[in-house]
Image 1 (cartoon, rainbow, N blue to C red):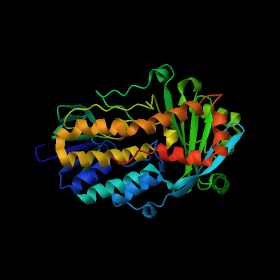
Image 2 (tube, rainbow, N blue to C red):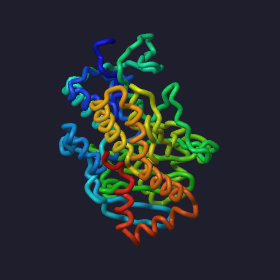
Image 3 (cartoon, rainbow, N blue to C red):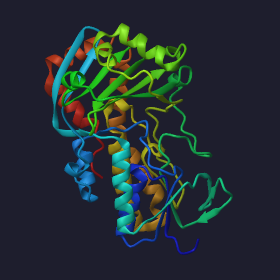
Image 4 (cartoon, one colour):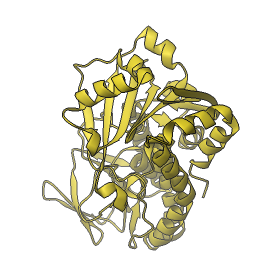
Amino acid sequence: MTDTDALVIGAGPAGAAAAIGLAREGANILLLERARETGDALCGGFLSWQSLTRLAALGIDGETLGGQVVRRVRLFAGRAASETMLPAAAMGVSRRRLDSALQAAAEAAGAGLERGVHATVLAGGTVQTRDGASLTAPSIFLAAGKHGFRGFPRDPAAWQQADPVIGLRLRMPQAAALDRLVGDAVELHLFDRGYAGLVRQEDGSANLCLAVHKSRLDGAPEALLRRLGEENPRLGERLAFADWGAAIDAIGHVPYGWRSGVTTPGLFRLGDQAGVIPSLAGEGMGIALASAEAAVTAWRHGEAQAAPAYQRALAARMARPFALANLAWRMGESRSGAAPMVRIAGLAPPLVRWMSRATRLPGG
């Protein structure tokens, strides 16, 4: 495909944002998405104030998205609880709405979007697809999300490998009583070997996402959720509104804490293909958007040859947010650390706001 300047694999937030930026630079872009329709992806329902600013730069206004405004963070661990105002307003929004807005903006900017194209192999500037096609471009942007991509391992830390982390998501229907319980907060429920994040979305429904170690999953996911509700009364209050007939989405072996500063000329790794921050930080979408912005800037200055320098610089920017998020994660999922951490948060709201800022990806 000689007339294509760049191929972007994956039309989630990282890939679509990169396509917008590249198209604005006048590049001929082809954006490949394996799903035929935009779905509601398992992860990424929280947009920080920084992410909202980055979206605005891409032409997507927060008011247009119409998500649930989030002004505070609420922490729970056993009987301990705390509530703190965030440094600035954030937003809860479904991935279906966010991804649809970004994909529409990419097409409006001039990028081509092909759906139902499943990239399977990437080597030497050529992308092989499941249907046997070969697509070639001087620059390739890999934005395949949390799913692994053949030939690009993302190995979690050794301590996770013996007891890998599984991501679960339950959508909870809108209910007036649940609205009153959660309100304009993002909630983190900490428990032994895991945590759950809860935030309301644009239609009043709530997105409950969990990161739990495999050792906790003794049986079906529903059984685990019910058990967690019994062990953690405040989480149980929320789960009382669950539609237990709805599907519980799952993804296995999520490499939280992994990041890489290594790539080859012509290959820009974005979002979760560059680093996977523990989800309790709420910065997954921030990394997707920031990595796309940085990759486009690097490409503008050096095209294909700029990729290795971009990847090293991005890894360096991720170092502090990842280290702090990993620390909070390890404390939050430990039996001895979770409750003291929540009590400290209740006594020192400025520390929570500092942590909220410090786990954002700094500007590049």
